[in-house]
Image (cartoon, rainbow, N blue to C red; front, top):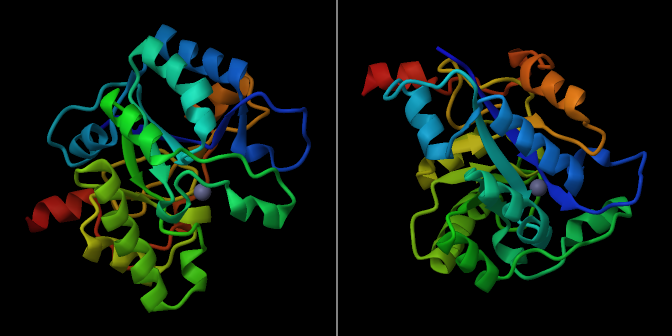
Length: 257
Ligand SMILES: [Zn+2]
């Protein structure tokens, strides 16, 4: 079947030219050009739940299928990304850190980066009303593979419960902070009942993937449209970078059901 490109954005906005840490910034004009590119060249932007249905074989996958994900829940999503997405009618999945709602992105200070504001609960509910999907990015933006198992479970379970309180609905999707995951983290995500979890492994998503370790492609500050095309279609990391072990693929899960 056609693969699905899950794209990973972080901040979208106006930023000074920068050499380091560019991977998590996307200039707002480049973002607008990238979305126009998707619209113009006939891409279908899927919600994560629609993508999962395609990967499970429950519906056909359109030939140029993309999912747009935004990590951390920056307020600049509301200011710069959402107006563009709305204009095109594109859905988006934003991953929130449950303990940092309405707070600055404090963990960035460790890398001497600015700590921009994250969305408030009011903003999250407003955007949900306008059609944005939200998932969990853990309680405190820690590397799950580096903490003990009880702490992993708390990050995964408690963030789901807290975000469900804010949203008043089930939170079905998880994203590993820094892409950091191991078998314990994947198990905790399964146990908590999430339908999907995304990593930072750069590859297209296919039915051969485990829905709880989905690959994604980072879009960075320097990506002009040629770079964007390159990331969409060419640049992949080998799948053996996955920590999958005995996780089940979409196909295996379907066969077992
Ligand atoms: Zn993050």
